Length: 224
Image: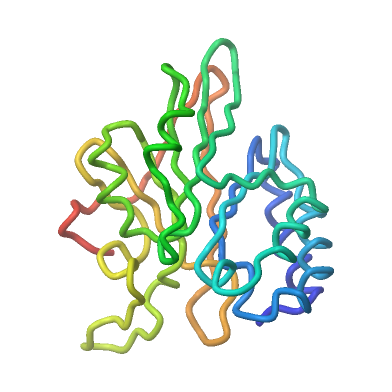
């Protein structure tokens, strides 16, 4: 687990990218949210983005009373999306960032979320559990899904299958394509064990919104 100083270091590293927006895809704790509230509020408050810091919840957040997490996000001026949408406008173009509530605990409502999407713009979905991408892609409303949850494989050994959690077995780490939608899965920035931490910066265009990825894109049946 990260301590206060480590969390602050990650937040400052994110700020060094001078982001227009920062998105957080959940699992801010493993347990004991009330004990972590002050530390999380401090880290969230360090994060700075030109437009907004935006978040959704994960299964560990919703596995107990999530009120302390919600208070910490609010104290850090982070916009929490529970089946909701936040839009950013640049020169007449909309970037619509949607977020579903946690899938594991059956709180995700994709229909409600889609009903809040503007008719135009580039649509990004924040969903903690990456395998929700199959459901999201079938709606044909999203250009990109951003997820976490899998930790890149809970346990990864040479010549052995990765140990992965439910809703994180198909899309494990990195970039995938599901039909017309791309999905990027981050292994996260902290864990109790050993998966490599990850902080992802998405390049941006000054004139419009687009997602640029230089890595090969596996199909839905492929895996990084």
